[in-house]
Amino acid sequence: MLNHTTHPQGRDSHDLNKYIWRFIALSTAQPRVITIEATSEQEARQQSPAGCVMVFAARIRREVRHD
Image (tube, rainbow, N blue to C red; front, side, top):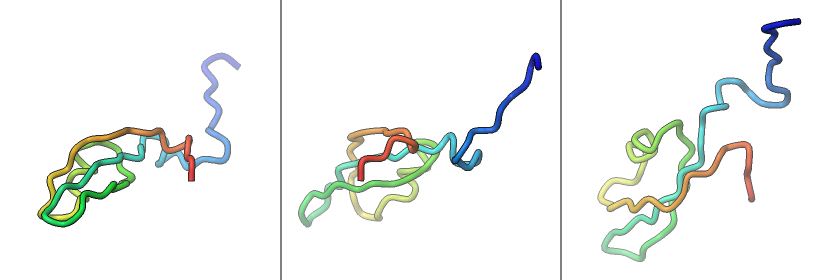
């Protein structure tokens, strides 16, 4: 069984490269923590609310969720 790759169990292979990105969103209202699931910081920022300055706070692997 040389060069045999086992498919990840219990996970969708399309989601293996996704992370949970956390930002502090600054606007004229109260600052708030925004959580976005994306493959890159750039993709996460593209999904962020309009009119907010997004300050990077954390990148968390999707498999390690603390809800």
